[in-house]
Image 1 (spheres, rainbow, N blue to C red):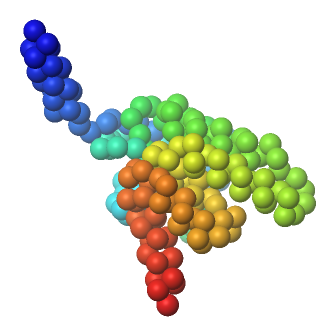
Image 2: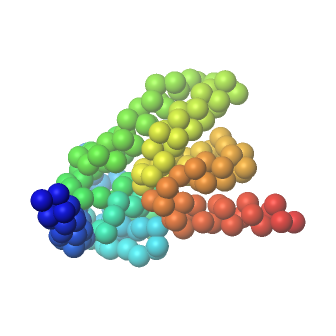
Length: 206
């Protein structure tokens, strides 16, 4: 009887694994209340591999739908042609579920677990914001990112936290490398992590 139960459990696990497939997502947003709303004419979705999708902005609103194999850090790029051509981008996690863009003033994406995690991470960072950017403030900000990375070693949102630390020069190169080594494949197999590690390894080899 025990053997039967074991094989039945294995069969059930294989069935679940075989049913696992692409995860569906939708992204809905409006920029109608922002001064740029009358200028933005299209929105691009660009992921870590450089592939993209494009939709038109109609009456200040846009919508995406598609599938992903797993959550990934991506960027949404707003493109406008007047008064002069230009673009600006915002990061988000592409993951299963209904993702809502709350508008350009807030620049927040909500409705799915990892996007909500980024919102909470940014809220912690904003809570310590001061008018003077001194060493104490930068250390506190680095601590917030460092704690998030260590507590979420295998989340796509951790790539966002690492990027923030690198772009703001909050982490030394060696610490970035060490943090990436402590992370799981959802982080250290991304192009971003590979590029950081390759650069560090090359400098160490000189």
